[in-house]
Length: 631
Image 1 (tube, rainbow, N blue to C red):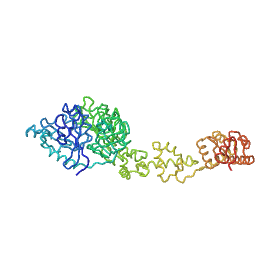
Image 2 (image 1 turned 135 degrees about the vertical axis):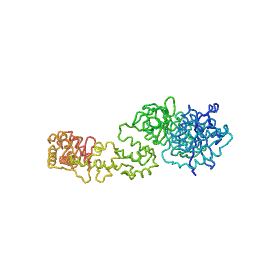
Image 3 (image 1 turned 180 degrees about the vertical axis):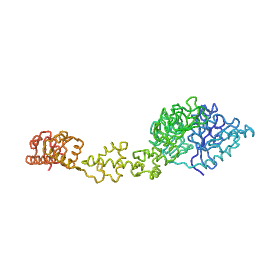
Image 4 (image 1 turned 30 degrees about the vertical axis):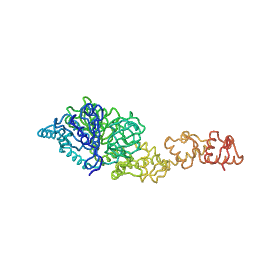
């Protein structure tokens, strides 16, 4: 027997006895608003807890039946495990019965019972006729073939049989997982004197504990959970599938509205577009034209949106297609959320679907778009992961993949097991890339480095940032560092990347001749070296790129030494300068810059640059306007 939390919901036409039935089963009148009690009709969602014959605790969500309050009814459906579709025996199936049935199917409810209420008001022949017409109305729906039971909530007739059916449904429910990000769509918000702000909702994913930090989405406002209640009892934590009341600390009631979601920080996106598979109800009278303005319901939220199809300009009744809903205000949604669409005016349920990419946006001509969306719509997680990896040129971090799937960190092990056979990756660093993407990147890198070494043989490799900008622009720096470290044929030396075993140096006799000419020119310049561009002209080198490679090479070989940007001195001349300064200071103990300039026989600019270099090498030390030897 299942011991998971169980939530039943009601549905059906106004005045067919939904609230009375719930009161008979639970002892609770779910009509709490004064207007509901005075008018005798449900306006907003009602909630009640009860105990099944086995002792398992369960809850009811009682929804309003009037067509004016469909938006409230829809807000309650997302939390239902099973539904009781209520049909009054004295009236039979009515318009709202059918619309509620459509909504339940669109929003993914799969289990339920049909209850014929007020059965004591009709004779047996009429009751059989209502049961027959009800079965006809249920044909083709998720309730086809499910039990139909006649009850009378006043006399109690049929209620024991109904309780047994509820018990059976509860026992057959598959277990819920408590993994994944916490999500609580808010359906009520109010204040309690002495406690402050309280919100209620059905915890559809994850768990919530006292003192846990969550955030309101949309708005990204952080809140702390001061207290948790389940079935009216204070508890330390609640798990997915339970009706929950939360006392929130340090947040005003006016900051919270129905439709927001309390979620694990950063894990539930706030979006204005929804990419999904949309189906138009067969009963809809008109086709749905592109750019039509509709009411879109997700969880307990409702936003206005316009619909854009990827492969057509209109959707005929009964058809389904991939589309993008562009919302007029932000909405909290994750992949696999069910959504409902209703016509703008007059409002009527016309269809709905499943969210495939919250926040997604595509162009019609995007290659293989339909195939990709079909993969996501299939619900095959392995296929989805493969699709994510195949369509990412760059390595993805494990957290990025989790976010795209709408998973949380506690599902990392499951994701790694899926990634293993189809990617080149590393669970320790968390980076993964599709095997085909890896092979392509390694091939491109090898080709690039070979050519770069041929063109820039004097350099110790390519600078990593240059490699990124020219070959891996879309990659993050961290993912590139990880990738380079995984390629055995590649060697990394600080910021330089090269083929393993590559040694920089002249590749031709001409290269060597030009290097010798540069060395000679620098040594001839002694302590009055020209700036780089002037030196290039003196050496008659038209190829500026080769020249600057040569400057780097000569510096690495310690043939020349950098004094400042654009100014280099021959190492031989620098050694002579060190000797001259050392002799002068040993003779005099301390000397001014002017005195040392005379000892160096150069102008003040170069004297200052040389002396600052000697200071940095701890050969000399500056004391005020004079210098002394360090040793």
